[in-house]
Image 1 (cartoon, helix red, strand yellow):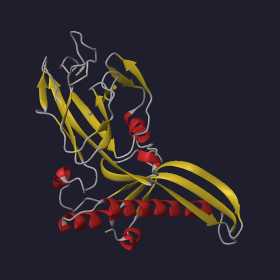
Image 2 (image 1 turned 90 degrees about the vertical axis):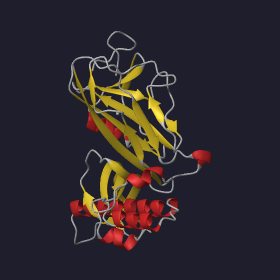
Image 3 (image 1 turned 180 degrees about the vertical axis):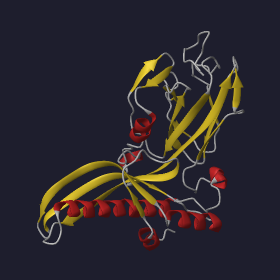
Length: 296
């Protein structure tokens, strides 16, 4: 599907902390995961001592930082989810009892001289803490419950589109959220369709259906060659999303990075950005995608 603005070829997506620590899965840095998660920071300090190498000390500090991030995520979910639905609360406990912690970025890392611990290694990370939903009831019922973790749906009336048909998308969250919607065509080109130069809103109300394109949008999504599988991804969070490299291409933004880089940069959430100067220690995050098939 070729991207040209308004032309013949027009552009066409509680918490039981002891259990959490006991079963925590610590992973190496990677490009992020789809579904529900919490993005937060964590810090750790480990002393060198006489029985550890510098590498071992750095590894210990990183493990402590991951545990700190997991604790903050568990505390956030426990306090933010004032859930009356006992089944939902039980599901959340089960899901976060086997959380996966992914290091998104090392914000600080240095050797320090601690007054009490001596030579020590200090590290601060931005991390994503994702619940293990395997074996837990589907998250579908969460979609309309504002007390549940952030859940956003992205839908289209059909999965198969033919030449000259118009693609329409619908976006809805269970609570207020910030969002970025990215369209990846069959050639791999990434286009940010929301927000865009004419529809600049990036904050959306919960329990409200938003249509794309609509309102101030000046693009359409008309199926034209080349045909194939196309993917639309929505990234959403309860705090402003990280910035990505982009350039204006008519009524939309052309993204200048690969999908993994876009996903990683989007997770660069500034946790200190909050209403009335309130400092946030964690942000709920949600990623989902749909695919459509285009043909002649």
